[in-house]
Length: 300
Image 1: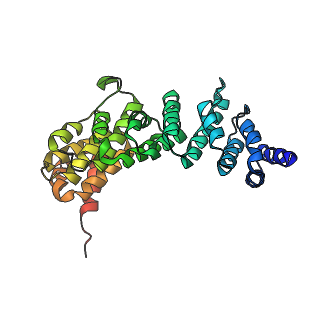
Image 2: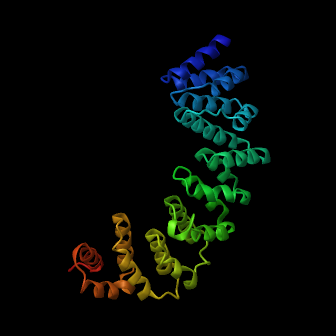
Image 3: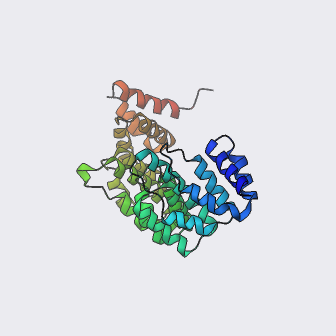
């Protein structure tokens, strides 16, 4: 049996027969848990993480909860960034695997791990708990590109319970309004989208109209979209003029979104678009003409 386990781990290292190795190691039963746990903590300066993630798969199938908890509580820490990147992926795989046994002990361990370092797998596991205590971690994760999707999933699980926090995030500029970082902008964009999605009764003109003049064009666009899509008491002319201003944005993908929104609401925005077109020139005029053309029914 020992030789069979050693051969299985050797196949994991070889990268070519990982799936077969996982099946063979699982077939060895709980005798394989100790060697797999040791393999999980081996150093790999290359940062290659697939074999260790497959070891996590085998440990999970063998119900090795305590060994996985031990790894999550004491993951290896390396100074080399390449090696640490591989460890981070493995740690995330362990966190996801442990969600087979969700309990207070695991939640506390995940919270501790997340406070040390935000990792997609850890954030994903915390999000799946659907607990309000995870809101500080989910809020921080919205600013991280690799963690944002998992954090958004966590907010959706919480639904209306997260509305107050989402509005605070949507309007909090870090470190200041005039020196806001790109991470802060991305977090606020996500927060505004989620707020509009999860808090359908919360939008009011008094709240959204100031946000429509936000210094970040993406946030301003989202606020304008919410005004037109959700509010019955909406000053469509003012929103239309703000959207026309956003057609000057240097972000061409945002300009496409603005055009599409103006087309969708041309019945209420068309007069402002046509008025702006009378004096427009260059690419700005082209964008306005595109809105008008898309909004005009084809001749029969």
